[in-house]
Length: 366
Image (tube, rainbow, N blue to C red; front, side, top):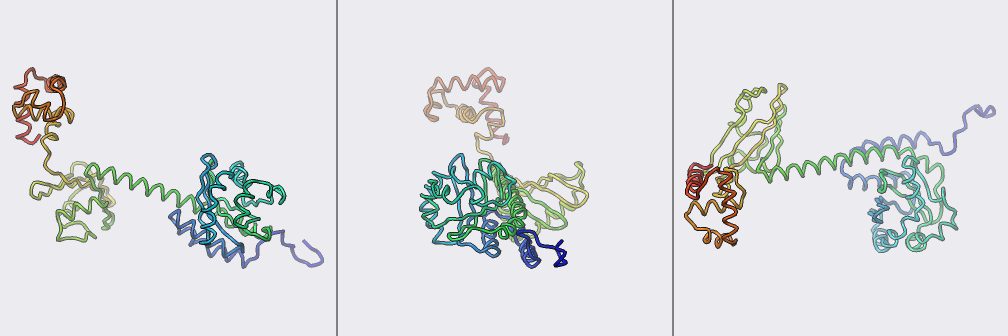
């Protein structure tokens, strides 16, 4: 307390109420950026509105691999950075801010002059071969993510004057929010990528998923593709086809209810299978489009491998080992070896009995 003035003296770097209000107004939009690329672009724009500088960049570096990704707020600077990027990656281990952040991830907002004099900075290869070429003398970093050996940060850069403690205080107020927004976007990005991988796996299995919650329907692309094939007149599918909705309405959450529904179209059929049904009205439904099996696929239901199924099919057609070998481009000896395995799997002792079993499987559909 200053007795003479009768009021508190603001600590060095303390923010004014107008500054904190301005920062707080930016936060909802910051947290709305749920994609990492969009977050990086918005953060660069946001910082340019709170602290004056010559250049702002979003940077990701991997110190072990000597790799970096940089997004700058100037097309000219971006082109220069790309031109000199090999020099930056070659000498990034000399960067005092990278080293400090990797040693102390919670160290807050830091600048080069915290750790190096101007003379020492100018003597580094990193300054001579990179920063001097893009006319940058001063840099301050706001860490967003540090997970050694990788870090991501917003860097503000100047050519003529260093950053003040007041400007550091502004950036420090933003730092925890930027870091949290990064974590949110990273988690959502990872979840989105996992869902894409899951959907790709389901597609490879011929399975789609439909979720029904409080009357709202969402589905994977493959599930929608199946609905288009079997119910073209009811597209677009903001809801389920009427027959499917009736089935869902009649499906109790316990396993004893009607769990499967089929629709046929020529030789194909579409199966709806209730995966999850709950009292609160939420349902998860798997869709599986089933087409006629190939001869080999039908024979594989007997417990044989793909190659063995091919041999068994031609055996059922009355072909000799030599003829089967020519057809499948394998030797008669290999055919004989596979037949021995087939006989064991089918628990038979002759070609004739194996052929009968194969023909019966083909006629009955497996």
